[in-house]
Image (cartoon, rainbow, N blue to C red; front, side):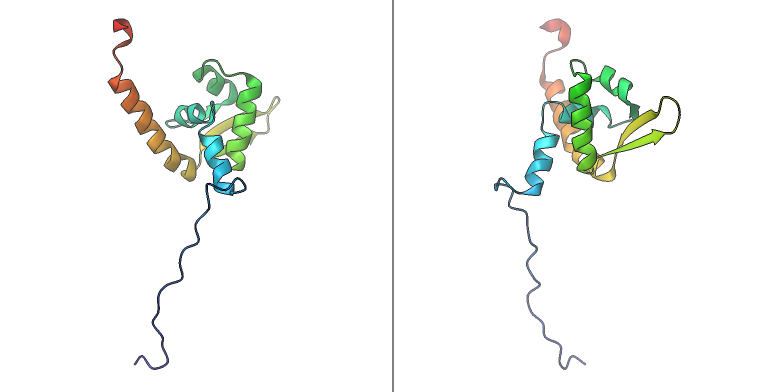
Length: 123
């Protein structure tokens, strides 16, 4: 019995206007593709790391830039920050589900690039 039921087109899914400067998705893209954002996501792809472990894994990043990058990625929901109430506090960073999802193509890109480059001793 379908009396009174109207079938129509489903409402269109509203998409973000990523080319507009005020689009929230654009800010996330900027954070992910920033100089250090990519390296944070790749570094955290396998394990959670403490701040100094993360800094050691990303050569060349300053503490200030790593802190700023982590703050932005945590705010975007890509990285989670866990603080253990010890003295001094132990802070561990890991990828959220969203962060893992975005990290997959970055890892694939990284792997493709390194497969195509000549071996380090051949350069």
